[in-house]
Image 1 (spheres, rainbow, N blue to C red):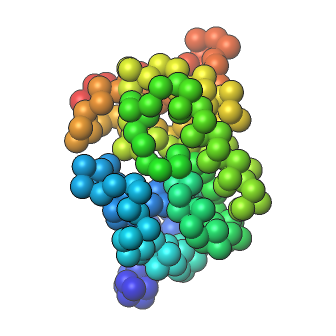
Image 2 (image 1 turned 90 degrees about the vertical axis):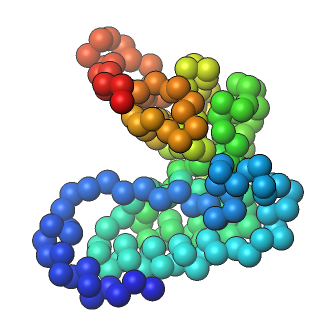
Image 3 (image 1 turned 180 degrees about the horizontal axis):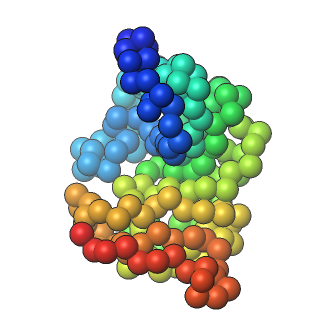
Length: 196
């Protein structure tokens, strides 16, 4: 565990207004390990997510901050008490899909089934509404223009799936922020960010 007292040296700047999010997944579930770790073998790996999340929650409590936690459905299913602990501390619960499958590797119907199933599961166990979604590895791009309609249709109000950077596997995604709601006029449209 990090030395919590060392954070007090940061002074008031540490307690500024910021947004913080956490992807709740285990080390073996990241996209970079996909060629080496079969999803069917996930139960064979040592799970570190609960211990790591407890440390993160302790840090957040100490700092007096809340954030949004994007849960993989698989993690939420395996560790339902973890979901409940996060929600009980006042943090937001959002979806990270069920099994960390990149959106660009799914068709619209498979994606719809995944996000709808995961949102409902998170709501049932955590007991709080789930309105946010983040794609595995920020994998929303120009090949997946249907994503926002599917998210809106399945009860999601926002997506945190686009990061305006050149990603390590460069899915050639849009370099602007997106909402799942459909703009009613040009003033509601998000401005384009410059390409990097």
